[in-house]
Length: 223
Image (cartoon, rainbow, N blue to C red; front, side, top):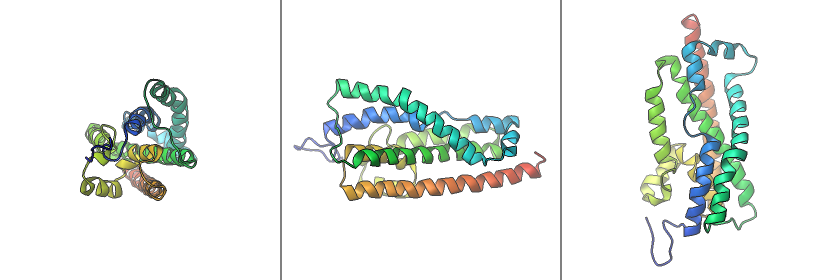
């Protein structure tokens, strides 16, 4: 972690870190990093069969519901901690005109990526029935690798750069927060959102493929 007389910690000022923490707390409820087992429960009880009979693809159906939930959480769970941070701490406010729209796009992509990851974890119920193992792995890895406990920029470059490129975890929290606090140049900001866009596409395709494979397994077993 680089710090010194400049007062910066890994490239963040004190105000930027305050924004990182308070907005990050609000984002937790919006992207719903943990705690979603609705699909796995329906698979275990057999109720998922009614989902498969609907004319809407299950991935689209659950994604639409998750977007609605996130919209409600944005009003009720995101704004309170952000307002507390604004009132009680010296927080960093964006200075570039495009940072606001870029942060909204980044937050939306983070929501889609997080939904896809949670959906894949739930789909393991088709094979395992009890998903406590995958859910525990997801809970531990997403908390550490998404930048929830500390900004990933505190890690050495040779750790966080491959992590950013090879896994979707930094796209869940670290990227939107870095975009918001304008830690990097404009090109880097846009590049990070571009990486999110790629991961969102890959995760949704993976959801489609695994869902199709799971349905085939269900039919073979007489479901």
